[in-house]
Amino acid sequence: MATITSVSQNRFDIFALFGQMMAHVRVSLAQWRAFRRTYDELNSMSDAELDDLNMRRCDLRDIAWQAVRGN
Picture 1: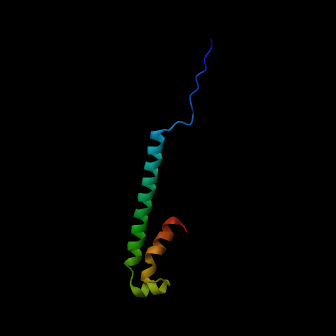
Picture 2: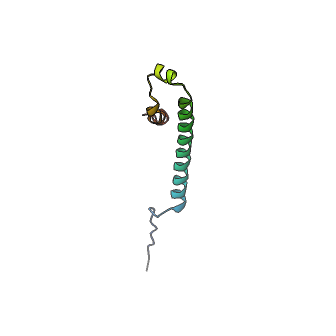
């Protein structure tokens, strides 16, 4: 009598999931660092310099995130 054993190829792979999670964390940290550098640089500008660039200080966070994420 012959028996057939099948192994599912869709098994849960904890190592692949962990690798994806770590890749996401690395990307998020890189984006955060780029945001902080951009925000700090913009925030260090004087009000006159920001006015020349047509920016308001209250919009700097949004502007920095848009610059980092490319929106």
